Structure formats: C-alpha cells, structure tokens
Image (tube, helix red, strand yellow):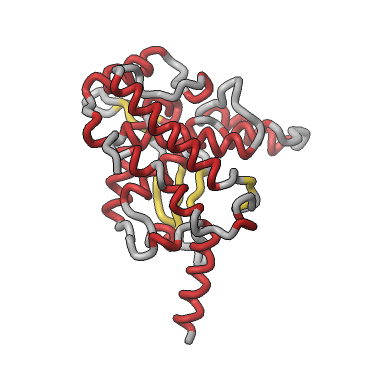
Length: 261
C-alpha cells in the first residue's frame, strides 16, 4: 500500500512537469557523468571565471554536476558554479533528455541569471552586499542586456542550452521535441504555473523556442558559422572564444546532431 501511494505521488509530480510519458527511461550515473564531461567542454567558451585550462591546453568549465536526494521532488536546479538534478528526475530521463535539462541549467549559470537576480534585491544589508561582491568576483557576470524578467531568462537558458547540447554532440532536432511531447500531457492549468517559486513559460512557447533554436543551430553548422545563438546577450564575451566556435563548426558533421527524428 505504501509503495502504491509513493508511486502515485511520483507520477503526480511527473505529470505536473510533463515527464510522465518518459517514465522508465532511467538515465544512469554513467550517463550523468558522460553528459557532465561533454557539457563542460561544450560550454567552455561561455564559462569565463568558471573555467580552467587543462594540461593539454584545452579550456573546460569547472561547473559541478551532481544528484540530490530530495524525496518527492522532481526537478533540476543551478546554484553558483553547481548544477543538481534530483534522483527522482534522473530516473525518468534518457541520456539525451538529461543533456537538454542540464544544458538549460548550465545556460542559467553562464548567463549570470542568479547574479542578476541578486543585483535586483535591496543591497542595504551589508552581509548581502558582501556576498554579492564575492560572487561577482568568482562567477560569470551577466550581459548588460540580460533580461530581468524571469520568464525570458528561462527562454534564454532554453536557447543557449540547446546550442550547448548540439556542441556536445547530441541530436538537437530530436531533442527539440522534449518540451512539445511533455506539453501534450500537461493539464492546461499548469502550463503557466510556477516551479520552485519561479515563473516558467508555457510549455508550447518553450517547445517553439527549442525548435527554432535547433533549426538555427543546424543552419549555422551548414554554413560553417560560429555555433552560437544570434542574440548578443547569449554569445561568448571574447572574440577568441567565438573563433573556437567557428573552428568547431568547421570540424563537425551535421549527420548526427542535425538528423531528423
């Protein structure tokens, strides 16, 4: 009886996030580690202070990725330099789905969204001001055009996350359907809801944005342009990082990352 109640509770959480149709895919810890390593390389041009040079001279992000055991909580989240996914969400994602979720969270970090939100708070508290000063020295600063609207920040993280997934070698056209498939199974009342107290866009809007980003990624790859979004606020800050993305476009084949499902 207890196991049955627990399963109903988990399924209700999955339904609220649109994840129920994928129950049973169960990404493993090995999948998580593989996704982490690939995203550390893919996001390197954006990571700035959250990066390091390896012995072979290649830059990689130092963003950490780990699981969190939070019973009944099905979500992923990003802090300053860290990304977490709950055990229960990990159990219901394929490796590709996992890459897209984690790419989104990497996007929040390298776009400085959390720093932007802290800057918008009242800084009269000395301890809060000291924390912000320290975080600004150790994290990626937000672009001057970063949106303050939480919904637009989510869409920006979706778009950049999709590019990171493609740079990591995952099939962007197939994974662009990630949100569209889930939206079909969501009650209409939850499409404009909140997760963890933060406004999220309607699932249809996210699906449309991901599909557009996948199309643009593949167009840029075909034309051998730097593999980065067109919006300036979503691009690396330094020209040498842009050149790295141009070189990567020259060496990638679209057959895998741009194949159609």
